[in-house]
Image (spheres, helix red, strand yellow):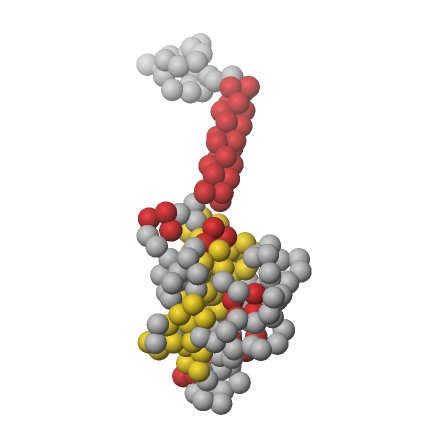
Length: 212
C-alpha cells in the first residue's frame, strides 16, 4: 500500500545533533589559521631556515647565477663551523660590494689556522686542502681558474701576507671560482658573528637539486 500526503524528511545540513555553524565563526577560524601559518613561516625564516638567491659567478661551478639555496641558521648552534662548509654571511665592513647585504663563500680555514696559496693549491697548517667540488681541470697548474693571492685591489689597509694566520674569532672564506671571487683574500678574515648559517641544499633550478 502506497502512503500519500506525507512530507519528505528534511536533508541534514550538518552532523546529526549539531546546529549548523555560523558563517562568521567559519571566517574567524580561517583567519586564525592563516595568521598562525604566516607567523610560523616568519619564525622559521627568521630563526631556522631561509632561501637565498645566488647573484654572481663567484661560487661556480658549485653554484650558478640564479640558483637558490636553503640555509640552516641553527646549524652552528649545535656544531662548530667546518672546513669546506658553504656559508651565508652578512657583508663584512671591508667588502666593497654595492647593493648586496649577504654573501656566500666556502670556509677554507678557521681561528688560529694558517692559510697558504701556492699555484692552484691551498694549504691549511701545511696540509693541502682537498677540493673535490672543483673539476680536475680547474686544479691543473696554469688553469685560468687557479687560486691566486692578490697583491693589488685589496681593501684598506691592503692585501694580506701569504701565508696568513687567521685570528681568533674569524674565518677565512673564498669563492669556488677563485679567479672571479671577491673574498677574504681581498677584504680579510670574516668575523664569526657575521655568519648567518650553512647552505646545505641547492633548491633551484629543479635539474640542479642537490646537497652542498
